[in-house]
Image: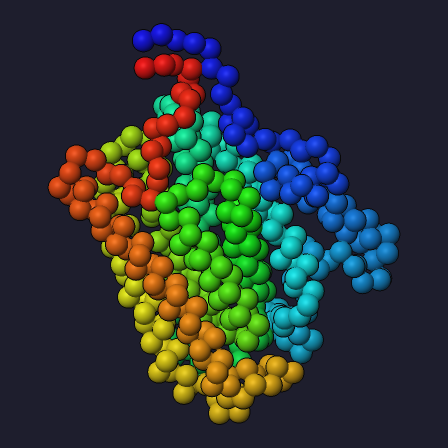
Length: 354
């Protein structure tokens, strides 16, 4: 074994500095350079702050970027409610940049060094560790459990609590940012790249459509089934990259149980609710009148059901791969992810050649 000086750095994979805001905006470099996205995030904050102190009696035009819009005037000031509107697009766009900064900062400056500190040697594994570590952190978002009949009772659910509205729009921004990550190939494509793109498109479709037609309770329930299973899977993958084989095996076994329950049993339960519990929606709402906030014409039922069925088909494909991994873990020598290419490729981050 011989040692040579390593020139590998996390920033060699993904640059941390941009070339200038205008150049980064045109080239989409803000997606990869955390300092660039951070500068872009500061501009609305500085403009909002100046306006707030210099013209406090005039509505701040930069507020929709930073805060949810459309408070309902007759709601309780102690427990306000919010409606939706076109300014929500500005909030989503701003938080796409927020998620880009959070993702790249965590990945480059925390997760990559952490992986190296724990002895992960191959650069491809360091990158995967960063991706799964980020997924684990960002999947721990607030939501609630659900009883499916309440998806429809008292529809339309357009008087949203501020926490729900922020959560919904930030989820929308998150999935858009993740789709950009795939489009720009910021992550090394896996064998299931096509299925992952379909999954992200469908997730965005569901978020946008359920928000538009005031079915926010059902959208929130779908978030739960995706987020919780992602937490356990990402934890298992991180343990695998750290070569904590026993912990990884236990975590993966727990993941299979969680995935089966959330991504299949509960998702199918939600699909069944769309098909059978539509009747619980108030009769006056079963028409297509967007100006009145009611969208429950019969054809809209299929606009909700079709993307959920597509999502379930993608989940079934992944479930097949999961069961293959589980079979190998139980009867074979190693726990390996079928979706990943050889993660032992790439330079040694410690500069060693075996």
